[in-house]
Image (tube, rainbow, N blue to C red; front, side):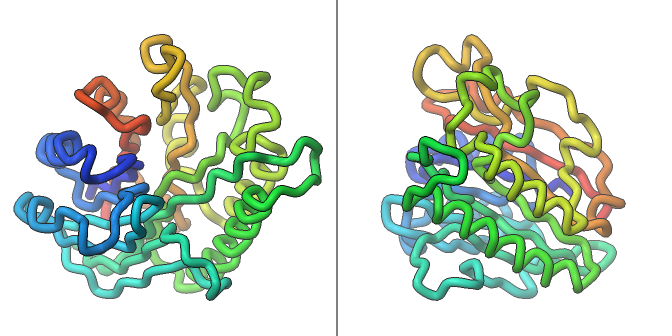
Amino acid sequence: MQIATWNVNSINARMHAVTKWLSEAKPDVACLQEIKTVDEGFPRMEIEALGYNVETHGQKSYNGVAILSKRPFEEVTARLPGDESDAQARYLEAVIAGDNGPFRVASIYLPNGNPAPAQIGGSTEKYDYKLAWMARLKTHAAMLLKHEEPLILAGDYNVIPEAKDCHDPVGWQGDALYRPETQAAFRALLNLGLTEAFEQLDGRAGQYTFWDYQRGAWPNNLGIRIDHLLCSAQAADKLDTIRIDKNVRDGVKPSDHVPVIGTFDL
């Protein structure tokens, strides 16, 4: 079973790319981020015509996440617990029927956090929100792991885990995606017992999932790896392959992210 994550950078602007990729790659589950539309504006009929069930947690013009599944949804939860005042649409979770029983996936669009504070340990509103959101995710993930079930937390984490995941570590120093506090919060997630799928099966340096639209980033491979599949032990044990669909970045009016796809025996 193929489970994918992809920040599409506006579903309506990238429908040509999304439908082409779905038709060619045929993932069983696709977790999308930055759909940038309210639920009613999502092109549900076009996606359903390709054989997918659709769940969304949208927001006008910004953020928004979706899960597409060829299998039925057994349970769907929108919003990350822990802050009832948080109106940003960044988290959608679903239980899906697999061949060997149900499994749980989440589509995650973690906050960017820039502008970050100038000093380590400093504070800005957006960076504080990022770290608080990551703390909430850790708390929720710890609860989910108690179910001892296959769990895949898929998404755009806006986290560059290590220097090898960035074309220019020096140039990215101080950015919210690469700050030590960000990396520490990401490691804290992993330390709950989660495994990053790419590191488990590949781990090579220079394998990126995002290239900026500016400064010739794509043709010069000036990328970063910020899209991740984090797996519970029960999911990691079923992980067979991992790949990054880099060719998608070459398309017409592409997203600045590309899909990451794991194959699981679920």
